[in-house]
Image 1 (cartoon, rainbow, N blue to C red):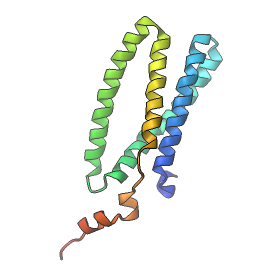
Image 2: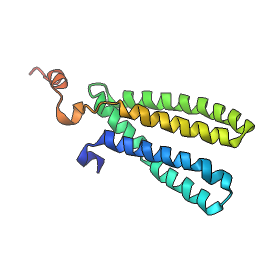
Image 3: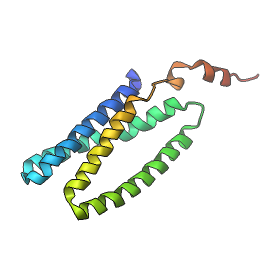
Image 4: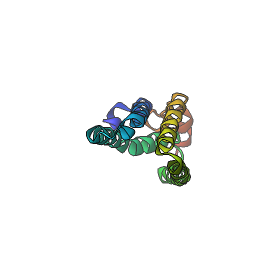
Length: 141
């Protein structure tokens, strides 16, 4: 569906907003101790987050079109792993103090993601034949 509509930014923003909402709701659900609320919250969060990786990778390839997709996705994967490692250590430190602090840091991180997604401009160079890219595509025969 994403390949047909080419609405990468809107899809990414929707994923970020739903992720932020579910992470924020975890602040209530997990400390409540009600098992079914925790299961539903974590399940919805998982379903929402499954689509973030292919959407983000496809969108990054669209934004950086002349650059090879393998390079773009490799760089994204490298920085995502570095961020996840750093954030995991930080969240573990906060969880030793109080689990609520770790969940709060996850909500803050999701909120920053929503804010950052609002400032991204959707310029689909590969799909729409961007003029700057079209000049690079001229091949001498």
